[in-house]
Length: 426
Image 1 (tube, rainbow, N blue to C red):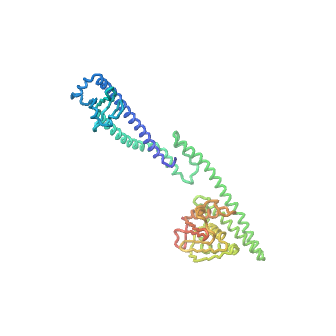
Image 2 (cartoon, rainbow, N blue to C red):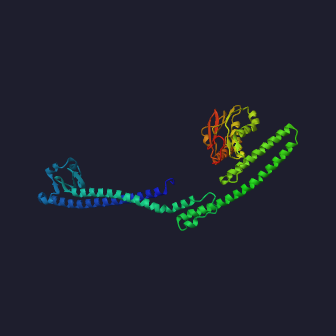
Image 3 (cartoon, rainbow, N blue to C red):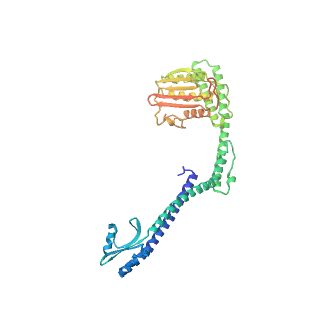
């Protein structure tokens, strides 16, 4: 019920009210006229017929020109009436059509048979038809005026709403402490403005808490990881066992992935990506090969064949950690769903394509793969592809996913505004 605009509802309601009131008024007017005619003419014709029945000789006066509206039928004269009129029972009848003329008819039963007296009311009926036409055109005119007035009134009524809308539109996402109730005090819109102020106050508190958390997390999460990486470097310089070297390498990669994840999530939590440390441009082909190499053990364990096809040169002016998070999640999804299959990786014409021959995604689930917390894996969290989608949206990349159950899934990331060597943040 709230999908239609207020303006349309105001105009529609006004038209309905005017139509109903006008129709009732016209109907009552016509009903009163009809009842008056029936009562007036009925009494007049009935009294005249009583006189003609009691004094038959007085019927001769009806042949005078002054009484040409009256017709009296008795005895053999009844045969001149239409058969449908002759079949009517005794009583009073208004607006009877005989030979394209309208009459008020009175029928009485006497011992000799029925007698009929008619009074020509054609002029009255013509006036009634003219009145009907006038009422109809008047109703049309009233409706047109009602629509125009309702349109004008709706502008006046909705002007405070438009003012509130304009005021809210001018509030920037970064504005804090904005309060507008005082500008609309004394009207119904003021209640909406007060509700907005209450919501804005709670939102300001929430944003402040989020900013405090982000600032703390940026320091408190990065510092332990830096310490761990430093300790791994020290241990790595003093270890001779290949097993220990591999373990330290896994620790270093895990810390690096954690740093990339922290950097990506903190970046996405900031309005406009302020404060991001871009570093050197990322060589996407090299990073892509590095990511594939990082997952070499999992690829071998799943007996997956990875085919790296054309890798066109491309530099991205984006932090390496964020790009790596994107590649990690897409490739990891392909690995987890392609056991015993094949994964093809290609980078050409600003298009990164990762296609697998896995189980595929059902058509009814495909529109939800980027939704937060949506997953088809029992132990999944649904955060991976959602994080990828948010990163792509922030950098104005376009991500497309196509899948067919039983035949595999293809994910394409398109980097816009790229000349083959550099891609910057939009």
